[in-house]
Length: 379
Image 1 (tube, rainbow, N blue to C red):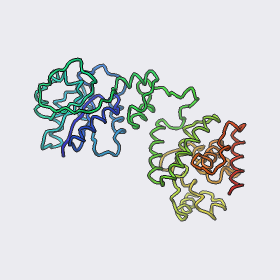
Image 2: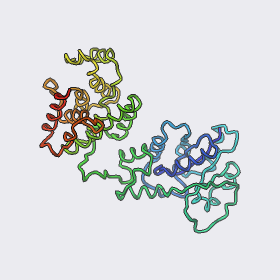
Image 3: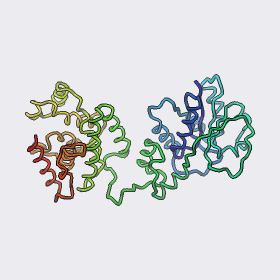
Image 4: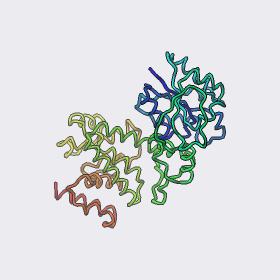
């Protein structure tokens, strides 16, 4: 296996890092090993995220991709990191039979001769220089064997991203989704929610809400058909918007919406067995048509497998099929919103579009009753 090494502070990892790593894969390498530095000799004052947070962002950014690996040898050594030590360590531990590639940006090439034991690095690796600079101030000959990649330039840097985050500018799509979730969850680099002016409150029941939702959304996407998953996501988006409009936590709405059909693929026997074995009260309508229990099953799964304890979310998922009723005493505003969103989200093209005009209703109950009546009249 041919390995290439890409080291850096990854503070944070961004799409430019992965783009350059992808160039090495196209150049014939089987895997790129990402090596986060504990402390770079040239970036001793870099701030923003701890070593463990940077490692977590890297891990979240390459999930499910065997073309990438992460080696934490520099984090384990601590102190200032020298590339030659990392190369020797990786060659030995990975039992490499041929030289690894070493990926550099051309912004580092000019100062490579200052690196600790630069000649030994050049001897033990195949140096690959990728374009990072639009126009170098001056062309400095690189005195070691190498090859240059004539790639397009992605004008992104970790410093730029940190600056954008701290100043409240647009940055979210300069980093992989996994890294973005961690930055937002952990409030790294001075992050503050940009939607505060829309009264999007911070979720009250989970510290890592974006990661939780991303996991559940992926689970739904993999378990449902494409059209059913599209319905779930449209439900989540509409529930998010309705929660904003009616003064509820929008993340509660999104989570309940994306998971409300999580158990839609269970058969009747499985649904009945789950309900009976867990002591749930089964309504006569549900006993006659067990498929109606898929909301109950999804609620149970959220509670037992994903540790979702918020009763308003669980009840909303539980009662989305036929709607909150007098027997469902715990079902409140969120349950009504999920029922509404499930029944009239935009992929339901046959629905009277006027029902989606939330501003036309005086309150949530009026909108809920209008959708409920529409369902009864057209069922």
